[in-house]
Length: 236
Image 1 (cartoon, one colour):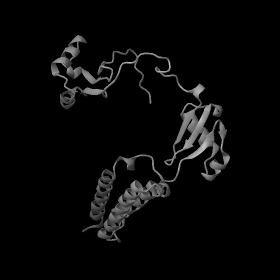
Image 2: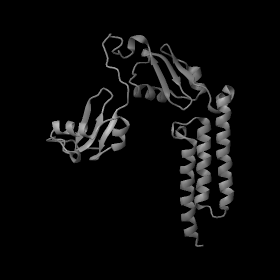
Image 3: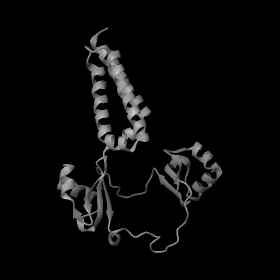
Image 4: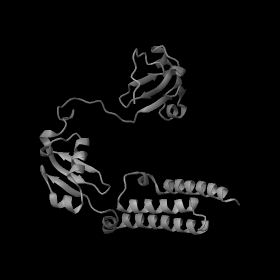
């Protein structure tokens, strides 16, 4: 077999092997990574890369190594579910970096977490004054969780004793790209006649609609292909 054909086949094999493994490992593999997830991901990528182009290493050796790594991942996940100390060992602990408006420099140095990063994360959470922060916690996946002091928190309808309409379900997509989502209608007991009547009230047909969704509050949102905007903004 010519080398270039072998490399093509091995590359496809490496891609689908990673794809299938990611599906098996679950959505957690797609989330922001812990220390353990980072090591596993780097190692899997290295094995898959060698499978794709390193023709000097036999395919079954690389596949065996990959399977062993996947097995280790499942084993550590199982152990972590059963043992709190194992979870702590593999994932680490969250670290408090701000307490009652005061930066905990010792914890920052221990985590090698710079003030520039801290300020950036705070700004992304609309915090520009550290004095507003009651606690800021650096999570095990590297994100920063911020709890503001009570006087700086966003006021909710409950705080103002404003009545709210109960919501019992998620928004339901009814039309997408000019096509009715029949399965969504059936699962939520919505009839085609009701949807057609709603469209007629707006002088619309199904093929005019880009997107239609029934909100949790019972209101129908419809977006059409023709937005009727005189000067639409088309900038990246």
